[in-house]
Length: 295
Image (tube, rainbow, N blue to C red; front, side, top):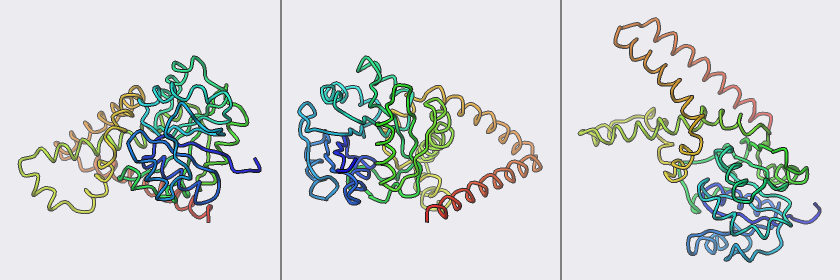
């Protein structure tokens, strides 16, 4: 595509606004923005996050791409409004952390899976949310997973890859099912544990003293409990099967640790901790290699 693609980002929260800002600042697209909250899109234009404001989803300019940056359970009503624009679209994609439910919603709402539709999910984020947290470098050296469907056109796959690579992301492809299983283990479960721990400690009678003396380990682990509750509410409800499977495996392992502590089984504890350290060191090496490769 010789000229800049025309991209509409619907939902100018952290991910949507960061994607829009990255595209605009790198001259990779002409970016329109829409947000349901009053004044948010106009503020995004004033902050140079987008080029132009869209006020009405049922009256859209000619577009090449629409990005759904809204929570998963808010996708259906948005699709109802943009139906007329889909026939001339090259790409319809999303940024949701769950893919199976998004595919189901698209199919049920539109009656089909259009050729322009390629589900996607950037593996990047921050504990802050909203337009004010927009960061044009958020996706640099991070993966963006696409889950092309049998119905997805080559042109749609090419454009989604082009746009995310322009934002600095490493685009990889996997199946919808594999994505939801992997993310349940590596993202959804850690967030659930962080939310649960902070909630448990906050309900302790001495919670002010507990938080006052908490050190870096608590800060690092609990950071993700500051994430958007609405978004994570949707994720946990829409990736229920995969999340429950990994949560139950974790509960079984946690029960074994509880028993080891109760019985003073130091050998078992040391074995688990050693294996965990080796796995974490390997993960750190992978991250370092990825960063070195991108430089």
